[in-house]
Image 1 (spheres, rainbow, N blue to C red):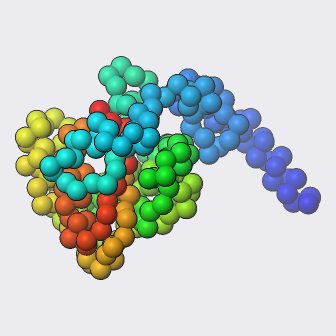
Image 2 (tube, rainbow, N blue to C red):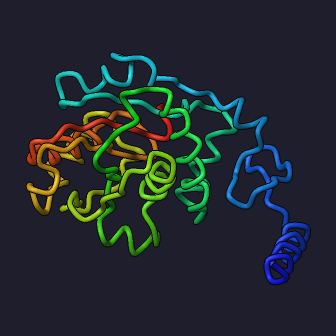
Image 3 (cartoon, rainbow, N blue to C red):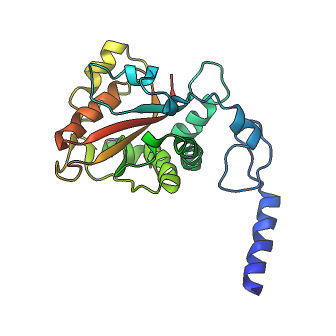
Length: 232
């Protein structure tokens, strides 16, 4: 009891000296695990696609990849302060942003029966060279947050990036398709045989990367649904 009280006092002192702040508005947060205050979380431009079968995101995959369902947590809008979340996660070593946002999104996903039960959560993999350079996979951080709430295992050993392709940032739609053709593969087709996979990425623009992942996963004769933190 005494030790627990000491830990609580030290934690309170730490929070007082180094307060955890909302990454959008700067308001002090009660929990070190949070990255958004309640006000900013409520204002996030949610897509609510998890509640809408045959939504606009799912239609991007029609005729290109066999996807069960697809959703994104929020819209990636020009000028929106919420774009800052993705920059912190991807370029500023803020892995905690990805984990927290995954948790927030998973709470919403529980509203939909289609997004409650999966056999595995699989983040879009980075090439080993890119992983060494960045130090972490931002999609895996999001997957960890989803896993905490959905209680589904994150699997990172089967789907892999076989080819290190150049960055997609400044490429046209056609160049993005060419850039992702055949770059993913599965290490063992038996791992996902007959399973339902939730494929996770940070942001969806053209969908070319996710489609390439789905095509590789389908070698395992599995069902695939898609989740992205944001959708352009």
